[in-house]
Image (cartoon, rainbow, N blue to C red; front, side, top):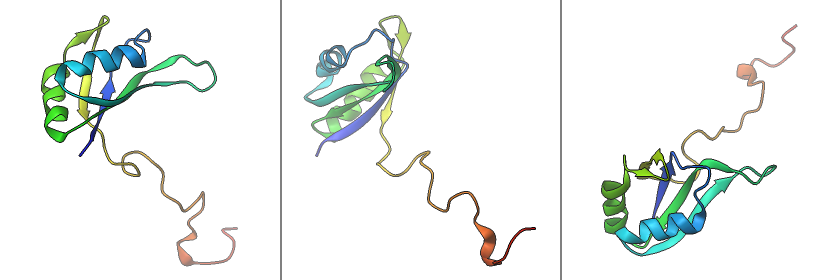
Length: 104
C-alpha cells in the first residue's frame, strides 16, 4: 500500500520533478509534489512524496531525513492522515457553551 511522506526544508528552487528523481533512489515513487503558493506560484518550501510501499517510505525517511539537498537540510517524515494535524475543527467563532442568549 502506498505511503505518503512529508518533505520539509525544500529549497525554493526544487521542483516536483527533482523531488521525484531524488526519492526514486529509495524506491518506486507514485507521486511527488512541491506545494506552491496559489497567488505567486512560488514554492512554499515543502512537499509530499508518495512511495509505493511502506517499506520504501521507511527507507526514504532513513536515507533523506537530515540530508542536504539543493543547499537546504530536508525534514522527511511519514505524512499525517488527511483531516488530522493542524486543521481547524468546526464550531465557528462562538461556541456559546450551551447557555443560549446574548453575552451582553
